[in-house]
Image (spheres, rainbow, N blue to C red):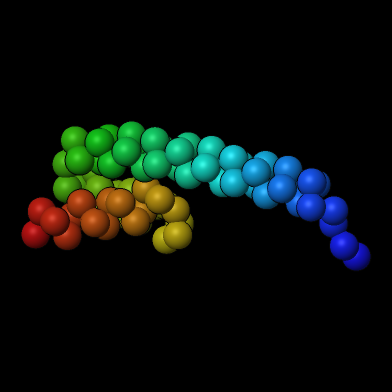
Length: 70
């Protein structure tokens, strides 16, 4: 099935805009979460690590913050 060039260009632009919007939203969420976690104590970070799923951004960032603190 061939997509006419005009529709292909429109589809590509829409996909790129959606990807950029998703990236911007994820980046903003990452920055907010990182600032929030950097203000927490080590015990609070350990609690997050124990109770939040491993692939969740809060778990990963809490681990990174604790490793940076030593």
